[in-house]
Image (tube, rainbow, N blue to C red; front, side, top):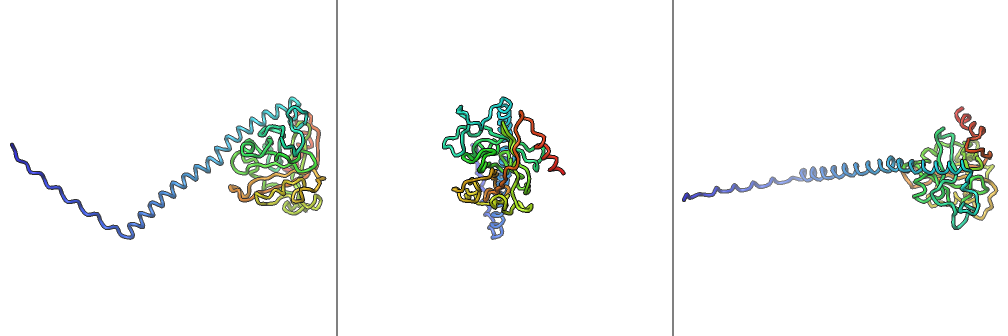
Amino acid sequence: MVDTVEEASPEPASAPHKTWGDWVRFALRGIGQVLITAGVVVLLFVVYEVYVTNYFAHAAQSKVKHELLKEFVERKDPLRGTGDGKLTLPGSKTPTVPEGTGIAFLYIPRLGQDYAWAIVQGTDDADLEKGPGHYIGSALPGQVGNFAVAGHRVGKGEPFLNLDHLQAGDAVIVQTESKWFVYRVLGDDGNIDAPDPAVQNIPGREIVSPADGTVLYPVPDHSPALTPTERLMTMTTCHPKFTASHRMVLHAVLAKTYPASGVTMPAPVKNLYSSQES
């Protein structure tokens, strides 16, 4: 038998004493890693909100456009009160057009030849992810009162992304199965933000709190009991871009009405695009 002797284990070296500077550097490294992670998360969120939601919203909008155009071609007007499940009158407690379905097309020459959106019924989250939405209970296109429409500004299709580009007098075109309506943005002497003396001192554009519902009244910014006499249109969206702290609101008044002949844009409406470019 061989006697063995265990080797003695070396004593562990004592850990170096951390200085105040070491702790500061440790903390800064930790904070840096947290900020990098947070930045990546924020970047992914922005990509999702702007690009991914746009992809799905445009796909949904394309489907609504196709279905609405098919109805127009077949001379089926979703706004005609026929007692067969179609929309009847503004203010109805039970809307008869299913929310999220198309009711009209929207064109704005100032925003380009390719700007064309189907307006859907309703303004809840699911509706607005398909396109600009008609406030249930507000007037219908061409009616006396206030035809009010909401739309996202950034992400989810962003139909109202460049609504701030509009100027006083600009045309806003709404196509229904039977008529084409040309609204003109309000303002005074070319100033879109000034009250329009010809239309009850309603401005062409205003920035308001999200809680300010007076802009949706039959006569915007006036008493809800006031009987409307004008045929108005109001568009609302978030302001400024990438936030929801306020709402940008644009008001327009009906200037011209043209009968529809199939789904082809009437020549006087087409001319609005050439006059916009000149």
